[in-house]
Image (cartoon, rainbow, N blue to C red; front, top):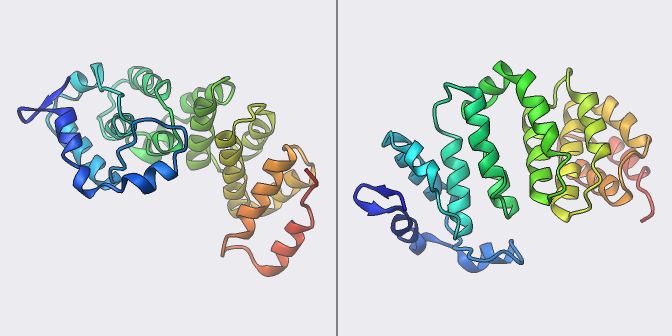
Length: 236
């Protein structure tokens, strides 16, 4: 177990429990074991301490995954470390992705350097994320979807991204929700193109309808457009 400031990391993690909201967090993660309910800002602060120590490679060699929040911490550390070698970094990210066991673990991650990093390495990251969307595992697919909706809804990638979303065959709830979320983001950024995509009915009916629901929940869409979108809802 990684030692930080002379304390086992798990002890530091468990020391955050007084600020936790365990019951509420557990209610959001049905079927997920060992949920502490720790606050993300507290986890992020701990991740910063790990990275600032300079010993983050030691941490990443054995991050621990007993608690859901340990998996979240793993993702947060990867979101903060310096990246000198893109392939080595993506190998570390892949190790994390295979440990994702909830939507919170998935969604807490961001590429280190954010949009600047993605812009500099888009030609490598696009196929990397597309590969995850082809996985048979629910949270690996969700990872690909969530990362692409965050970083690749742009003029260059919009049409191939919507094609990728339409090609996803995984029926897991957290995959379908992520695809609906992604399509709603696409509509806000590129309404005409995304509307044409929805009219083609390329998505499963449930995902199609959920995407329309999410779009209609946005304050950025006017009333007339919402009415037109609701008319596109399908049976099933």
